Length: 360
Ligand code: IPM
Ligand code: MG
Image (tube, rainbow, N blue to C red; front, side, top):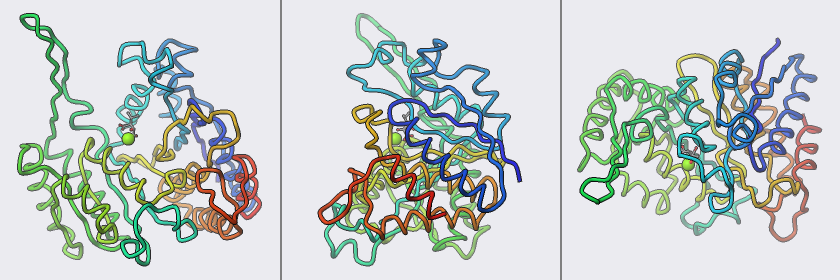
């Protein structure tokens, strides 16, 4: 089969890690008889430098015209880069929000997996880690406070800012369905996270999730307040299977989830909508401090490409093959600097990509 992939290298380490993911995809193509056609698309700081905006209409159209999108990372050093002197709607991150909204990618899947080979990188105690953990955060991605009305005004000489957090029941229902569908393919447990003791949006969230749960009698649903959830994630991460939550809570909890695995350089993510077109990107950022030094870990991007094969192209065998290759490289003791510890062999971005590709 032929597949059209819009590739967005973006900023910082983005270009280097995306290059390795494409290398691995090309090997998959050779081995399984597929052809991946890449179209490079500008987004983020690199787009600002070339076009003045973080995502042009043409770039969005090119992404829409593809079968799927592979993204490195966008953004720079907030303290140093001139991009952050621009108004907020012209900064690199605005491109990311615009593509999520423009492609209607309302469902963000962020797996948090403890790789047994990297157990020593996990900041939690052995008795908490036990046999390891593997859960996924299902984050609503196109609603809530990220996209609600906002303004900054000065009233009677006092500066005032307002952000609003709207949700309607349809937005809640469609993401809840995703969470239950994902749970059906995993451990059949959904923890729905909200702040229903304070927020109206959370009270509606809770009701609609409960209604949706009736369609999935096999799935066990429990509600959890977001502050408690933040605590439970470090107290006992094994209790989670699917964590369903709204946009901002999901932003915060997914960073926490990745940290408890100890290996943020390993975690993939997928942003999906009503069609097969998805956007796949590593959970980590653009790491401008190590950009261009062949130090970044490309595994999160490579595993994101595997998620693309699985969710957008239904190429399960091929996705399994990439995941097995990553595990085999870890078993063989190869490490990039972020996951390095004593007794293992340090390699760079390119060498990690080569070793994974040669195991396909
Ligand atoms: C993420 C990032 C983005 C978000 C930023 C860069 C706008 O933190 O993907 O988690 O908040 O969604
Ligand atoms: Mg975030």
